Image (cartoon, rainbow, N blue to C red):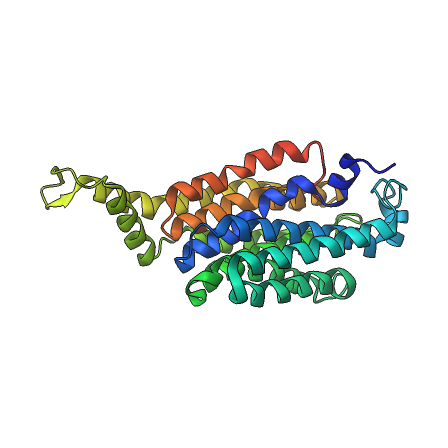
Length: 319
């Protein structure tokens, strides 16, 4: 009999902690953070779980040889149940996105769902696989931006997509192991991703100042450095500039260290550990992008999912 634990393993339930940050980062970048953002994040999680179930359904014959412990080849979940769950989660995810965000959100959720299924059924084992998976994550970021100026979220979408490319490229060597050149390339990519997320764009400073003004934190009469600039406002501008770099550095340190281990020892186990680090470490990158969009405290909250994801990954594999 199928249990909840079996279903959690099928959809890689803890790995879903790496998903809401896509939507939040996109919304922050586009100036679209609102009451509908949590619902769009929920839709994103449903689509992610759908993709995981579809992935295992598509790989059921290969997994019977390479990863027989997975739910389908081990007999704990039937192929029909897995594909049915994937279809149901897809419909629920698209439906929730449309209900929460209207036509603009639906216009992104539908191609996102199609790209997820396209990866699982067609692209995964081709040279286009990493690029298609990267497109999934980029669209996920834009889903969060659907209520605002989507073009402003394109840099954040590209950053998350680039990170996803590195993780997907590594994941293709989880069973066989890799040569040292692959982790060297992905490590270089991770450095570029972190650098791009660390830069606090001017819009983030202005957003931080607006947020501070709205909360009344700058209403005090004291000023900073005798310039007439309120002290609270000066501190907010400093935090807006520094926080993205701190969170991006955290992301690079954790994920980069795992990839450096693969350079030293490119065995399958090390590759799998690096893939797990890339999945569970993504919230730190999303937090940096959210902070860069002017939502510093929310960025810290998003990044806090990274250590929680690592703890849960010890119980349910994210790969």
